[in-house]
Amino acid sequence: MSTLSSVRAIARTEVPSFSFGRAIALLAGTVVAGVEAVMDRSELNRSRRQLAELDDRLLRDIGIDRAQARFEAGKGFWI
Image 1 (cartoon, rainbow, N blue to C red):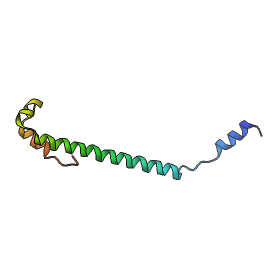
Image 2: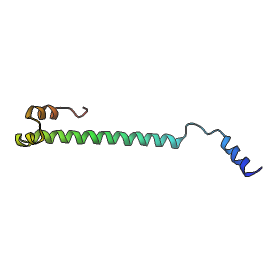
Image 3: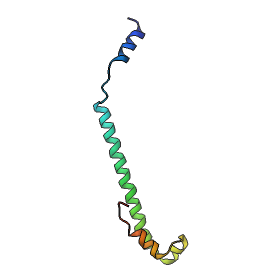
Image 4: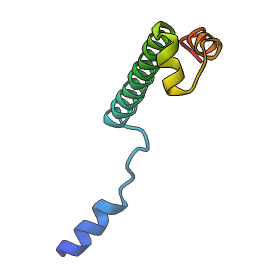
């Protein structure tokens, strides 16, 4: 049997579509994506709290009024 024949034989063997390593990689990717989403939401929540603490002069500088700042700061973590 030549080398090319043995490579073809190996290539034809059925590889299971599900493997433990692939499942772990998929799970790890999902966990990383979830952690990143929580971190993004946490940063957004922190920014909203800081916005609520700005005085009227600083709010005018960024082009919003107190009512808009209160509305934005009042949004929940999940929004």
